[in-house]
Amino acid sequence: MRTLLITLMLSLPIAVFAEEAGMVYIDGGDWELPIVREDTGQSGRVEDFLLDVHQVTNAAFLDFVRANPEWRRDQAPGIFRDAGYLSHWPSAEGLGEGNAAPDRPVTRVSWYAARAYCREIGGRLPSMTEWEYASERQRQALEIAPQDYASQLFSWYANPGAGDLRPVASGPADGLGIHDLHGLVLEWVEDFQLILGRGDDIDLLTGSCGDTARFLPEFDEAHYATFLRFQSRSNYQPVTTTSTLGFRCAYDPE
Amino acid sequence: MKTAFIALATGALLAVSAFAENPHAGHDAHANHTPMTAEAITHEHSLFHLDADWQTQDGRSIRLDQLAGKPTLITMIYGSCTTACPVLVNDARRIDRALPDAIRKNLQVVVVSFDPARDTPERMADYGADYDVDAERWHFLHGAPADIRTLAAMLGVRYRDNGDGTFDHSNLLTLLDPEGRVAERSEGLARPVDPIVKALERLHETPRAEAVASD
Image (cartoon, rainbow over all chains, first blue to last red):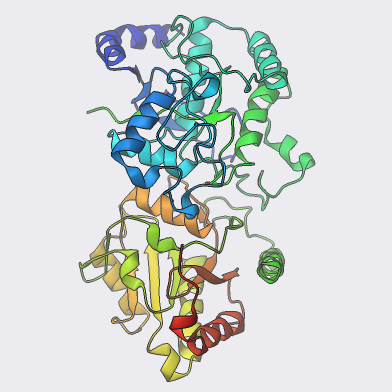
């Protein structure tokens, strides 16, 4: 914990600069996903990266669509998105009220579309490990007890509020300075298809519920709350668009 | 579509049983890698929408839509793979060699590496030379990591860098029709060549003018 604090202080000037640009600088470290994927006897390494402070909004995505008409909902090739792509917008290049308002997180975007957006602005989707690492660092910075983290997540899952989403970054940017990692909409990650139990020929995409429990190193509520997020990712196809799934971009440090 | 599903399911089943024959497979994480079941995909749209530049084994730049007009057999591997990948490339070669000359001369074979850091075009040239195949029709491609990930998603190939020089991945051969749509898939290793050979014969007999316009 002390090491973490020192690292945080050292990276503060960069962090301040990054936040003005709408990103947070997250310093890396040795870390393992909370879901057991393999037993290699080595800890995983997360390199430093930058993450958007808030989720991509309808307004920002509209700018992207205008500049790249091949991503309009009436022009995007079917191989890159399902029929629901941007279907909550009143028109192909028009925003509206409620979940289609400019300040709401963009939803009903496929993985292909999210990646194209991030690439256009010089970024990429975060890897699953990066996203989970940010989530865990945020929880530590806020000193949220695992039990409370679990309660908050269960309460959100039970009532995701997708019918009437809040604007992005409604509250203060707390913890690492990242808004809405939990509680607004779920987010695409680059390698969402890769949940795998290595060493056994099973994974979350093909395994039964009995198999899935084998991925949990501990059976407490926090691990189960995190596990539900992994399980929802495993239900997506790259063309999937839903009202509860948006994204934010990550960037490599210069 | 139902046929495709049955073929897939059968392929997966056989892949699992082939896997089960080796009691050590999958339990030694460092010596072996785990086959990942391929994703279901849609077959109605063209992969030629992928806007990406690839490099061939002789250093030429190529885009997938340049493959239009002829059928293409495509698979994804990594060069330092000593277990599944050589079998997969050999499976493509078995299909190629099983074809009548008139069909074979129109078939393009594409082998894409998902290990661009190690599998440079030079290394892919060496890799391809080992297989003694027609370099005019066989393309061993090097690409950017993001494009490789996109292509894999379009094909339904899952892969993961294990960080130790090995990759977990799906074992999949995909036949694209001349418009770039998925015509046939074969999942697993050392599978019979018939389904893809027969699909190629059907494509050969279908006059192009009658082919449905690609989305």
